[in-house]
Length: 167
Image (cartoon, one colour):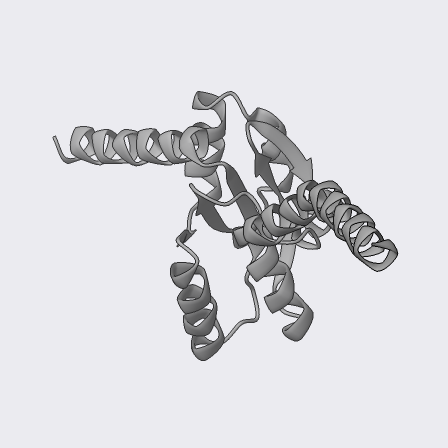
């Protein structure tokens, strides 16, 4: 009877992982082999502060979850020790934190991931990590939208000042 309970517990774990993969805006898979406890603790702290969930998972469970979530293309990177970062709010947060941490700690290797339902490789994860944050992108957009209005206001002011000088 214990086997049935174990199988049921594993199936529930697979269902939870598959649900996280479907609901997350981004999922990043990394190899953490070689990191010491202090480094992993620091990485978990940084990810938690950004609202990213970080778990070390068995590849066999992950493969079943990717099949359930229809993301089987991710299976090719599921070798060796695997840690997964699930980000439900910001698509860039997990990639940015893991990439920055990997630059400082050679032991952490990015493998690949999923962004908005699309499987991507290591190079795309690194490119995503180089993007500005959501707030940075919004501020850039705001400055682009404000520029024509600001230029128009300056032109009107210049015309008004010229009118005053001529009067």
